[in-house]
Length: 410
Image 1 (cartoon, rainbow, N blue to C red):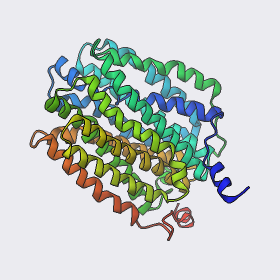
Image 2 (cartoon, helix red, strand yellow; image 1 turned 60 degrees about the vertical axis):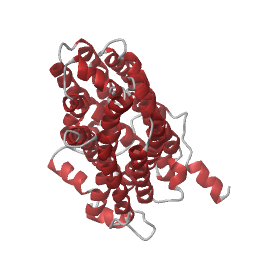
Image 3 (cartoon, one colour; image 1 turned 90 degrees about the vertical axis):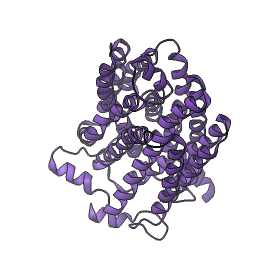
């Protein structure tokens, strides 16, 4: 077998693995949390007589509890096993759909969204941790890439579904969450628990998880996760629906189609992440992702019609497909299995923080300026963020993490 053939095989995804199948199915459920809801924001705003900023809380509150509790969820996953946390999270996520459908007021909706956000955190943390445990090298990038592709596929389809369901009733989209219940039961039967040393709880564990990454590595990787989500959930998933409604009078279903374009692009690029990882470091992929985000946001600012906005979202989606699998792969590369869930849970906290800050920040800034100006500002921030990943300290000459240095510091 030639070197090229060996490299191609290492970047393949073992589709018949029950671990891969359950992880991908669980990941597909995750976009029900926000992408399904994003096109419905104008309808929910009008139903409860809210402001744009108040309506954006439907997204932000979903992530609040996850920001604080993700490290503890990671600690539990490292102690009792990934499977138990994933199954519990799927069941809670699914059952929470019932009170959302029956909620009598917006305050009740927000309260249930907090609980649902905790379950979503458990899903996000355990799925990427299971992949990190089960696979190595470029195959890890490949599986994480496909996992992100599935996430993007759901995020592409669910806005259209949400736009169609909200035409029936403002609460009809929330009934979709019940799918989590049968999936949780399937996970009990088919998910294989990764082998590895189980960590004990306590201060020692938290200290170990916190020091598992070198300081510069943590700043770059967690910072990249945070900024990526701010730029996605602020300008794209929050500002853009309001802009398309105000400027072009698009219906929720049409808005869903525009958002779906970017997610479709992310599917394609994410699925190829394993191949990209053979030719570029994870830091290089992250930097290129930010460049794509910046170019795409700049295109939205310049776009003269909804069609051109949709084309610009293709570029933003490509950026997501490049950067997010690379962030998780880079963290998994330098952290041992005993602390992997903890380290990835901290990444999840920064991710959820970005998703929570983005909608409120941009909806709030829109009070003092216009949506087009916000898109330009977001583009500038994205373009400035790319070089940080390329020239970040704590890496060897090839651009990959110095594993010995990281292991020593941990």
